Amino acid sequence: MKIIDEINRLKAEQHAIILAHNYQLPDVQDLADFTGDSLELSRKATEITADTIVFCGVYFMAETAAILNPDKTVLIPDLHAGCPMADMITAGQLRAFKAEHPHAKVVCYVNSTAEVKAESDCCCTSGNAVNILRHYEGQDVIFVPDQHLGTVIAETLGRDLILWPGYCPTHARIQPRDIQELKAAHPDAVALAHPECPKPVRMVADQILSTGQMCRFAKESPAMEFIVATEEGLLHRLRLENPEKIFHRVSPFAVCPNMKLTTVEKVLFCLRNRAPQVHVEEPIADRARRAIHQMLAWS
Image (cartoon, rainbow, N blue to C red; front, side, top):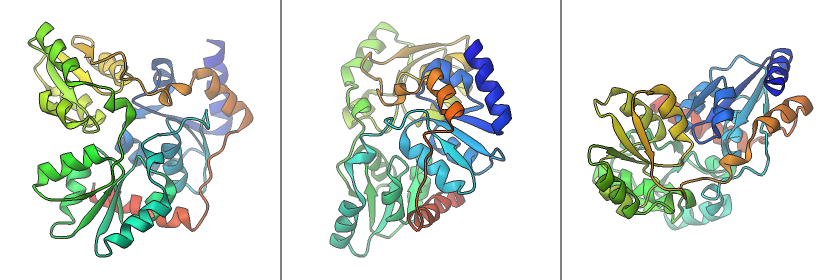
């Protein structure tokens, strides 16, 4: 409790707010003022009146908060909390890809660097991707970096997209047999899969949902038992919000090591030291901001 008391004291002194992604460690989620998925956190970042944002997530998320709040101090508890998927495409690679498809619009998943967002026309999250792409009906669209989410969008809308071959290593570790074995053991359970899962996994799931959508579905569904095919951190929020329901972890391998780098102790240290700070230089921030604002306007 001493650590929590000290964090709360520093938060009050610095007029700070703590945001945490659904995949964070349970005690970090409990510490946060707001927990959500990428879309929820993006929206929250536009509403913040605090002077300091402590972003408990991976680096691209803290970058997004910094882009949306150029007048605020944005801290990340661990600078090494990166995203392998975001690192699978660079701005230079995207520019070359755009040159191959000069008439195409570019939609990038928010799981991307500020430099990639700056080369894009619009961002999206797994929760709003289909609705964002509806705005580009009849146009060629490059979608980066997640090929699996891109395939879900294309199949849902019945159209072709120009996909970059990126993926999430954590969701790639989930196998179809993981869901099938749990379904056999728990026949009444509803299987929820994240769209970052490969197609063979999605095909054996009952619902394809972002983490925010999973939380809403679990609350509203009459089902009492669920198989959760995404990073295991979401189970903490699901169980807190639905104590009467049962949630099964899909696999012991569905863990993002980068999300788990953030600890309560590191939150304390970053508030105490006012570091590490996240900065995005102009004009990259300005161009990336336009793509994020376009997403928010269409959400």
